[in-house]
Image (tube, rainbow over all chains, first blue to last red; front, side, top):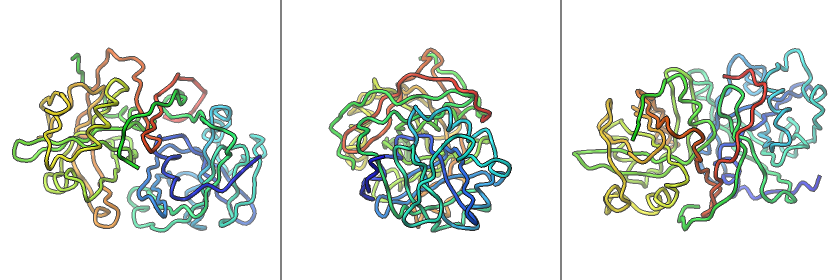
Length: 178
Length: 178
């Protein structure tokens, strides 16, 4: 797998372009996966991430209870499985088994990493004040992992109604931003 | 320009893939532009958008005072100007003039649309509770515009340190999501 720790100061470079992510949670030894696009960076370091998770989802109740999750970043090779995870509910299905994904133990949280994903961010809920009104969880990234072998990961980006944009070429511009 | 009203129910399809956007604000007849990547959809309809705007930026003070802005979505043809707007401050520069962008009157807010942008979302701040701690503004999109002539807009997506991913091809998958 070649998984390697990734500096927390650079986590924003994974999430800012808006990839579809797969959120894993776990309770009493049972893990779940949810596919998600409603997330944003909120601070650089420690990296703080905000995300909306529907209160009708199984992941909502797991995240609310355990206050832990992993944000996994798939590439286009996993697109079908990511959509499959979005179409099913963990209440009735073991998504790791059904979709042939590999749970890998995390180092700071009980929820597993998805072994096939390009990047993995172990997270803890640090602010739940916006959960009741907006289903909006504020997470701190405790530990980040990346597969260093993949140089230009072709992430997928949700356009709605079954359409996804696949990451295209990279351009360089004289930006003074981080 | 061929600008056309865009259904509010479909605004999520513009923002979910995570494009770099250009936020316009205005006070006392002077308009400003800020380039931003830290945003997420929070609800479908009315469309609610959350975004982080640095409290060191000129836009922060304008948005806090006026509670109005426009989120403009540029394509790769505007990438240099978007980066230029990110590298400068509206405290000392009229960015519309310096970067040769066209302010177009909005219909619901005082801030102008950027005429050259592919999409424009007129927004009002509806929740400022998270501003003091996270610089996080919650906006409602009041009116949306799009240039219908551009079928596959090549949006840009921030990767950090001057690198931007340009939107690649679109794939279709049997997703049951909106």
